[in-house]
Amino acid sequence: MKTFLRAITIGLMLLAAQGTTWGQGMNVALLDVGYIFKNHPGFQQQMESMKAEVAKIEQTLKQQQQQIQAAAKKISMHKPGSPDYKRIEEQTTKQLADLKVKTQLQRKEIMENEAKIYLATYNQVHSVVQGFAKKNRIDLVLRYGREAASDTGADPRGTLKIINRPVIYHEQLDISGAILDQLGGVAARPGAVRK
Image (cartoon, rainbow, N blue to C red; front, side, top):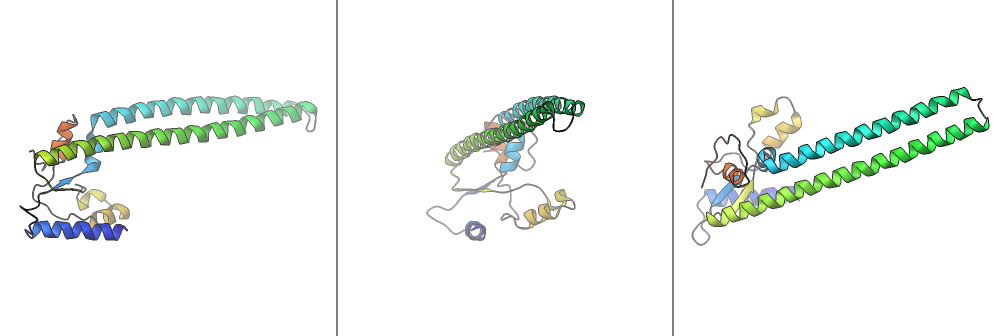
C-alpha cells in the first residue's frame, strides 16, 4: 500500500514538474508536518503539561511500590507457614498485582490522551493548510521532511527514511513557515515561502 501511495505521489509530482495541465495548471506546495508539530506552541504546551502529569503519576506509583516493599519486609519477622506470614504474603502479592494493573491502566490512559492531542493538533493543522491552500490556489499539498541526509548521522533508519522520501528536490515550495505563523508558532523557518 505504501509503495502504491508513493508511486501516485511521485507520479503527481512528475506531472506537476513537467507542466502537465489540468484546467489552468496544478499548484503544488510542501509541508513539513514534523517541523510544524515540533514548533507548534499549543501542541508543545499540551505535551509539556502531559509530561508533568506523567511525572506526578510515576512518582505516586513509585511511592506506592516502596510502601508495598516496606510492608513485604515485615514478612521476615514471621516464621514461614505461620498465619501472619501467609497473611503478609497474600497482602503483598495482591497489592503488587493491583499496582501492576493500575500502572497498565494509567499507561493506556496516557497513550490515549497523547493520541488525542496529536489528532486534535493534526486536525487543526489540516484545517489551516486547507484554508491556506484555497486562499493561495494550491491544488496539492504534499507532506515531506526538511532534514538533510547529514542530519541522520549513523542511524540507518534515518538514512533510509531520507533516501525513500518522495520529495528529493523543490524550489521554494515549502509552506511550513506560513502555516506555523497561522498556528501562532514562532521559530526560524529557513527556505519557507510566505504567501
